[in-house]
Image 1 (cartoon, rainbow, N blue to C red):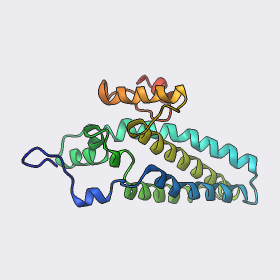
Image 2 (cartoon, rainbow, N blue to C red):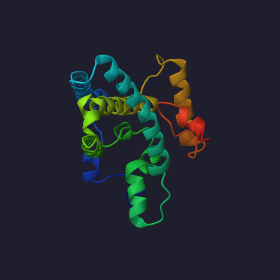
Image 3 (spheres, rainbow, N blue to C red):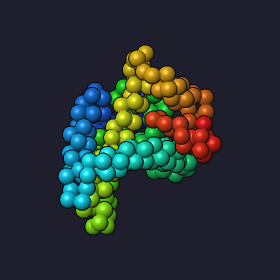
Image 4 (cartoon, one colour):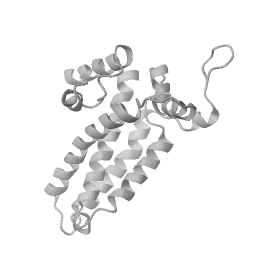
Length: 202
């Protein structure tokens, strides 16, 4: 919302739904979940450590595709209605308006929790054979790990010291800032450029 004097402010509800903790607090909430899902996968009767590790890394890679699709087609959805514009602004437009606001660099925890539960409900509907070998647990853990890395890296791109980052991640930051300040129809990937390259948005 914009006040009469032009000062930017948000409602108490919106503040409640944004991340005001340090990113490390968020990671501290995800790491036990990821560790637990991997452990459960690896200890299923028809599973093995090798199998669970493979599925976990497949899930981790899958997050890059999910991230790309969400960012390109949901976060940058074209809207014209009042509620459509409100939805777009609330989930992502506000980040483009204030890209260096440290409390708005990760997905609101309320919504991320709802999405996490929704994904898990979906994974519970996998065929029994995939549940018996822990496939759903390892896949969920890998995707959750990808999401955690996405939020952490994105936070650092805008509000952290990346001098110690590898050159490739510094390149990813440049691509992301180009998305913000040069062309918001390109460079939708945060943790990877693979799908930007594949779909011609690099």
